[in-house]
Image 1: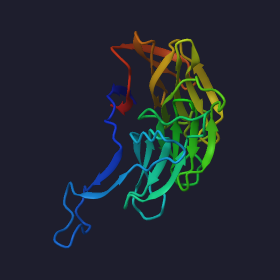
Image 2 (image 1 turned 90 degrees about the vertical axis):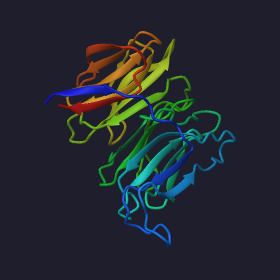
Image 3 (image 1 turned 135 degrees about the vertical axis):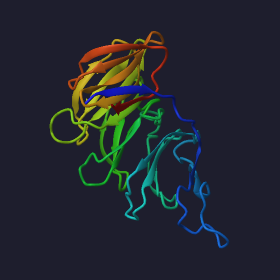
Image 4 (image 1 turned 180 degrees about the horizontal axis):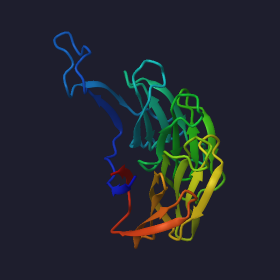
Length: 267
């Protein structure tokens, strides 16, 4: 089966969540039923007591399958004030929240839309949330979808210049154990950092392969049956590099700018 890749731009960043209707079956008021476009619930991102920064912009937002047992899919959100929060899709109540603010060292938030992935990484039948941070954190965390507890983490908690985690995709099995693994785009700095394509065992966070890229900066990454592709750049030129299931580069395509989003589609 053939597959192709398409490039898209980022979504707008917001600091509040509003959920609108796509069905009209629940009561909205005493005078009429719920209609298309009505607000079902709305919340503001809470303060993080660990910091006075409180940049509440929403960096990434994903639907997650029902984790609180009310038969309604829920919402996972990563914010600029270091929160990863799981909200009830039914009423917007906080199911759990996890902060990546740890003080003067190893503190950073999810900075990129695609640096959050939803997948069942502990094989318990409930989807989990995997995030990658930037700033001074630059680590990957797998969070239990039920309660937000850390299942595993990847990275160095004592360094602050390894480069942002810009993308995480969990879609294919790369080590043959029957479970999908996590592809990670880890950027760097001009004269240091990782600037690497990394594949992690999604069950435990162990490295399956680690491929340093010749360019200092990485962008989005996408998983495919034959391996995947990663956007890389040196400010200019910009390119997309295709790789096999071992992470080895097999093709390259020049682009006109940063590759913010790569998506697999089949024809």
